[in-house]
Length: 350
Ligand SMILES: NC(=O)c1ccc[n+]([C@@H]2O[C@H](COP(=O)([O-])OP(=O)(O)OC[C@H]3O[C@@H](n4cnc5c(N)ncnc54)[C@H](O)[C@@H]3O)[C@@H](O)[C@H]2O)c1
Ligand SMILES: [Zn+2]
Image (cartoon, rainbow, N blue to C red):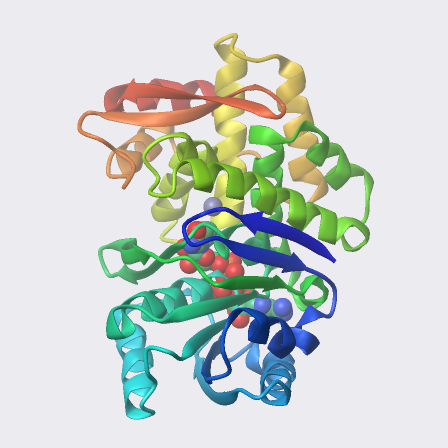
């Protein structure tokens, strides 16, 4: 088993092991007194892993409740969030009980936000089942739901008590969903871990998955601990995301997050090469990793369109926005630029 400790306040562990869901009750009982555990999951994950999780919780003495949402981003809204809260209230869930998020990033974000706000906050454990949730969204404490006006516009910072990554779950993921998570793993390689790209390019994912998840989480934890509320260095995690979010929005979300981030990383790296900030080799290695995992490097949208979309980005501060540019594989820099410069930066990378 691989363990990563996340030293936020309060601190928590991420345990990574194939098949760990079968034993989740035992691990959860070590960090939380036996109580009512509210398992929140989705219609796709429930038939695959719901029973395993409930059985393990019951074996360890927990009383269980289960709430199943329709799968996908369409559920990440205020109405489903309200339904989760009502379900907990109807079942007299108390402040000493526990939310267990079983699923991908959508479930993690929504169950996390429900836990953060129900009775002003109750404990939560994350059982991430997608690659994206394991390498990224289950750690860091960001929880949210979408509004019709935009993604993740309502939320809270709320840290889990424990995260259990069962890397066997990756085997049942559709290829496109797996690729979405892979884009984030490649991002961690680009910002902080040069050898990750080789690990991802030279091996079958199933052979190195535990190590990949552990390394991604270690990097994320380091940035999060130094900047829990996302005002400084944590912005490094945003590599490829300013352009990526613009691509997602411009496509009306028909292009998924990981694919858009892959294009965004490629755009920013080509732009950095053109400006002499990094060598062509940096781009070549990024491109090889993206292509190997079926991810795109080019996008159809115009630089002007993307710059316009990005000017509405949540990360904008006044007239400026911080972009992340690669210096070499494993090292990126933050650069504060005027919003009206974005069109040139993107344009040079198209
Ligand atoms: N909180 C954060 O820091 C953070 C970071 C990145 C992304 N996010 C959020 O995460 C969400 C995207 O997460 P996601 O890509 O995991 O999406 P998701 O939760 O919608 O999962 C993708 C699909 O895979 C299915 N699925 C999940 N696990 C499976 C498994 N093991 N086998 C088969 N199918 C499975 C789901 O039912 C869903 O249909 C977005 O809403 C995004 O905003 C949050
Ligand atoms: Zn992302």
